[in-house]
Length: 139
Image (cartoon, rainbow, N blue to C red):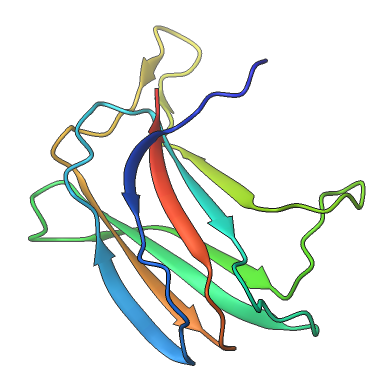
């Protein structure tokens, strides 16, 4: 299956982040009825290499213009270098979150984002770092 390039929703500002909670970083309206989102994370310059958790990403979604928020995903990132299961070096990590299917066996209906949905991202930083993070939609 060929790789699909996500349609950009937003990019978090790149900066050297100190220990603590940063955010929320708020997306614009997603703009289309995507069936999944992809978060792409690169370690950035000076990323820690000694063992241990470096940061955690928390993602929330709103269907009502930001009046209420639902938890959508949590992802932890450890120190580098990052490798795949075969031990090959990775320049970035891609996390894909499919929204799901209703009645997957009979007349499946793909759950999709509304074009007006919003996302917000929080970063819990445990060690100083400057990750490069973007979010895109997938059809």
